Image (cartoon, rainbow, N blue to C red; front, side, top):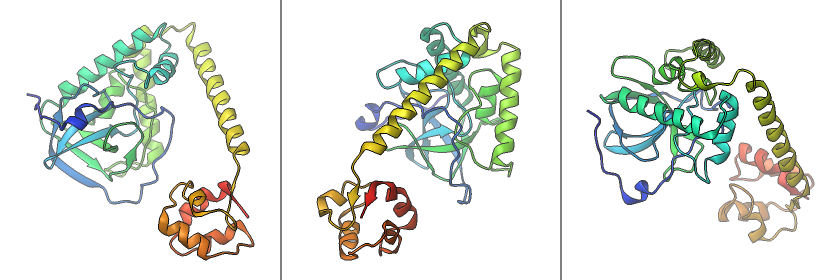
Length: 286
């Protein structure tokens, strides 16, 4: 039976939302994979087919499956954009159909994880608004089958999402291709979400989504261009603290390293990691 584990109040209030369903790739491929056995599924109102709470080593943890994207199981102010994107991808006539399929995916996952299962993860952070954060994971059911693959085979998820080398050493791109082939097979069988797909409209719906994405990207690019850069030589401590990843100590180090003759001098500031300096470089000036 599914284990009913009480959650702290702050976790009960959390809304679990999916990350944007694009083919992003996790940068944690070289990190050590950790295997946790005897993991239990935790009932939670925000659980979806591809993201859910689990009890691991006595601690509740929100998990997000690698490689796959199941439909949202509810529509809210936080998820309405995602529901529309998924509706268009699957070729559904309306959002209610997509949410219904998401509920089926969530029920499928609940059933598959009724017995203790295995989680393999590098604890890479997953996007979302969950309190305490989610981590990406590979989940193996009690019968030895991969949950993400099962969802795609049943037509309850698309083969889109963050990926990495699998625990059994299948390369990231190869695993993505395998799941994409399984998605195509499910669509040809009109399994799961695909039995509601409108073959005559799906191309136009996906084109509309791509157009919306491009429009948003243009707005974001414009905003980045128009935002005033922070001067490395003259900015006050409070201004430097506005930069991502810059706290009191790093702000003090930046001020101490003045004057700057090139923004690339930021790479030489003690206590500022090179990756962080690279990230904030577009937001600073002399």
